[in-house]
Image (cartoon, rainbow, N blue to C red; front, side, top):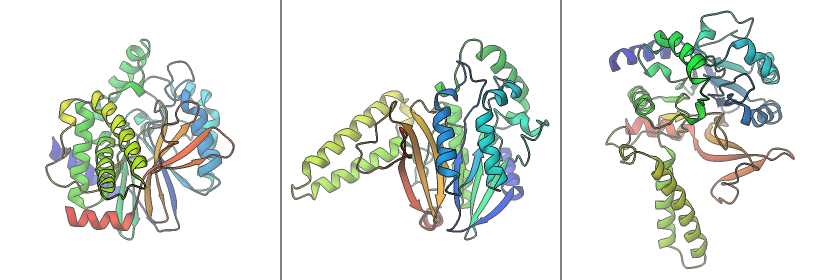
Length: 352
């Protein structure tokens, strides 16, 4: 099965649209918005105002190019006509990016039928993946469902199952366990493909943000270790502050560990070697406390988290996380991780 999946990914990687970029270009990547009918069972509804605001008031006026990386519409559970009716304002914002030549839309498994049917202009330029070329280094962006062999063959069944079984019982996409076995396999296969080809891959699909192949647990462990080293070398002037930071991150780590199965706690998630920083994931727009995405700007890549202060303020007191308020709203942008693309590609070449 893995061989066939790699063959499929190779075809997509070699045949998808290539776009040369440099330090002057600005991109933002979002996935898994799962726009529904605007009703109670619409996962997008609670973050709809947040998403519309950040696109219209932050990314659009700053001339970002928007990449929608799959599962934007929830066609498993809702008919497309009802989705368009419910979220006309969102589609108008998409159209504004498109009119400026700043929109790329990729399909996922939940909106796969957009690639097979005509939806009155809503699938113009729809693609399965895109390849950004930064100084001849590929950044391969695709949704991630391609790692499951023959998934598309079952799309019709999945759509019917979602619409007539999951929808009536109130099942929500945001409750999907990001660490179940299929999600882990997606990351493992995507990591092996990216590291084997010495490229960066950016996915969606799993709803789990990843930066440089590290999960949040991995990142917190490294952060705590670095703070411990800093504490060990401190002369006492910053000791209390460092201790409080360590306790705060340790508490967050304990919460995450309590939610995970034993097999996800081991080190070396994808192999026993040092992980190459080749796998990224934009997470999702429908997080319970906000939306995550990937930004590429000035030769750097960042994992960003947008949140409503009325629902989440967890990063407001983190000195290590840069926070910026959106105008006079209650919405904030947090840069969770950031690195230089040249540095990342150098590390990929050395570690693979």
